[in-house]
Image 1: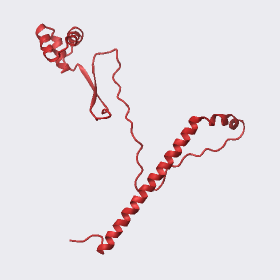
Image 2: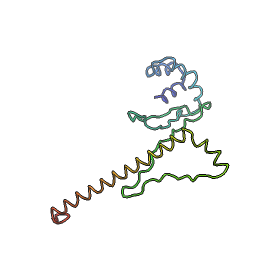
Image 3: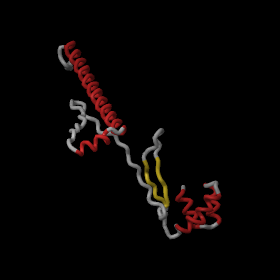
Image 4: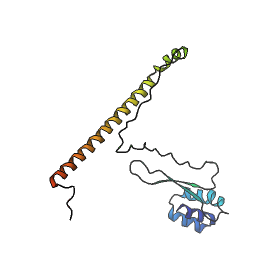
Length: 169
């Protein structure tokens, strides 16, 4: 719709202005299109807009896009937002759990200077968060192992009841 209004604004006559007012009800928008945008796009044969797809809106998942005039030099192009991706999930069959890094104590003057820095609340919160993440990973691995054992036991019960794994037809 915007490209159609800009095309009408390029013509600039009263009939084109009235056609634009049939679609856009705000006279201020039509005035801006005919006074500013139309003359700027006079030499351009089409393709007045740049449409950049954005990430879906959180909440309802609606598709979002940024629309800008291609000759608008003052503003930089709209940057695409960085996607927040989750860490890759571990394979179901793997047994290894994440291991927290172990720090070795330092000796000498450097160790004495860093002792006062290591006691900051931020580092304590970070280590508590790391420990909580490690415990959560262990619990998740334990739950996966328990589910696999339950599935194996159920399959064994089914096999014992029929004498075979599957009844051949």
